[in-house]
Image 1 (spheres, rainbow, N blue to C red):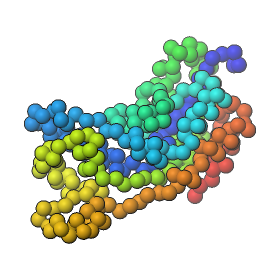
Image 2 (image 1 turned 90 degrees about the vertical axis):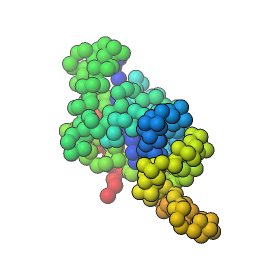
Image 3 (image 1 turned 30 degrees about the vertical axis):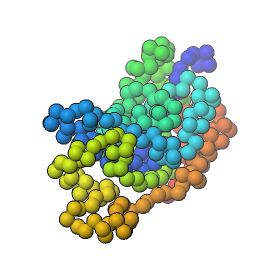
Image 4 (image 1 turned 45 degrees about the vertical axis):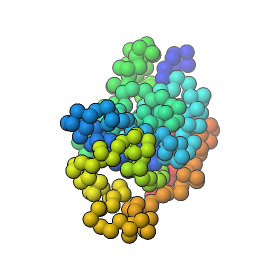
Length: 286
C-alpha cells in the first residue's frame, strides 16, 4: 500500500470539540434571521441581509487552543489528509455561518459536504457508515484507487479517525472514535450592541413586535422595558446587561490538541482500531 496514493481522513465534531460553547452566537444568528425575515415582509431587504460574523470571538478563545497546530501536524505526519466536520447542528446553521466562521478564524478549509444531524440516526447518535460512503464517492476523483473495494476497506480500517467529545457517539463503529474532553469556553457579549455596531442594524428595524418579543423571551439578550424606570437601570450595570457570566477560563489551560500531537508523534502512521484505543487510554474522562 506504500506506493498507492490514498487519503487519511480526519472527521471532527464541532461543538465542545474544536470550539467552545456558542450559545450566544446561535442567539445572534437567530436574531439576524428573524430580522431578515421581518425585513423581507416589509420590502426593506437592503438593510437586513447580514451574515453572522463571530471570527473575533473564535480568535479570542472560542476556537480550541492548538487546533490550528494540530491540523498542521497531521498534514505533515499522515500526508494526503482530508478534513471533515460532522455535527448534530442543523443543516442551515452549519452551512450559513458555523463552518465559514471557523474556517476564517483558523485559516483551515474543511471538505464538503459538511455532515449534520440529517446524517445522524433518529436518536441523534452519529453513523460513520452514513458519511463514509459519501466521503469515498467525493474523493474518488482525487484518489482513483478508491474505485477498488480493497482500498476503500484499507482507508476505513487504517486511515480514518473520528474525534468527538461525546463518549461512544458513533452508534455503528465506536472503536473508530477518539473521545476528547469537553471544551466549554464561552464569553457573553452584548448582542444588541453588536447588531447596531457591526451590522449597522438601525433602531427602527428593532422596533417591531416580533423582534421585541424575541428580545423579551431570550434572557441572554439585554432588554430594558420602557415601562420601568430607566434611571434605575442606568445606575445598575448588572441589570442593564442581564446575563449570567459563565466564562470558562479553560481557554488558557486546555491542551488536548497539544497532548494529542505528542502522543501521535510516538506512534506509527496508522489510524487503526489499536492506535485509536491507545490514544483514548491517554485521555480517560469520567
